[in-house]
Amino acid sequence: MRIRKCHAVAVSCPSTRARALVLRRSFTKLGFLALLVYSTLAYAHAILVRAVPLANSTVAANSVTIRLQFNVRVDPKRSRVALVMPDKSQKLLSMSQSEPDLLESQITGLTNGEYSIRWQVLAFDGHITQGEIPFKVAI
Image (cartoon, rainbow, N blue to C red; front, side, top):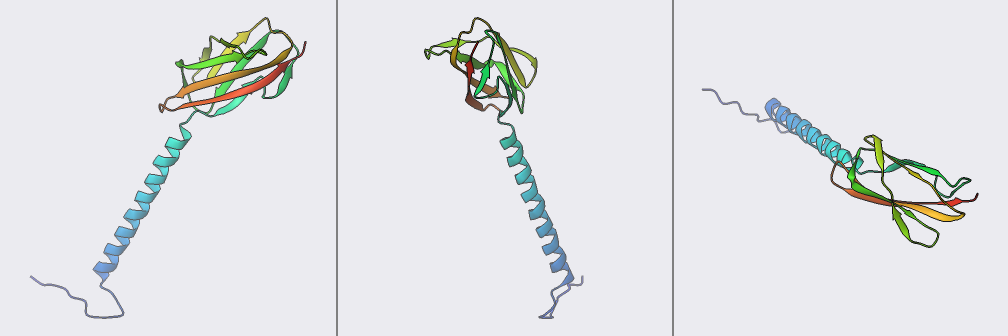
């Protein structure tokens, strides 16, 4: 059996350089994998990407279609959407879901005043997000 030794001071053994390269590549791959997992988890939170009516808009009708579209699918059974009336009372809305990332409802009988849509949704990753969309009705 032959044992190979490197005696040069300025040059390291080829096997040591190869091991260092393998370790460096392994740590780099591990870092990219950790970054990918973290970014996937961060992306999974439900973020509102489109809303009808728009925030701070004025609606000129007593009937309004509510559409809330998110960046990920949401669980409609564990999500809540309420209409906050001008007197600050709330009315829970029944929402339908035509697409996994979209909640819709129809509101009728609105009068002039300032309203808001208060939403709270559960994303498929198990995290709850919430928000509020103020709007005005001027008939």
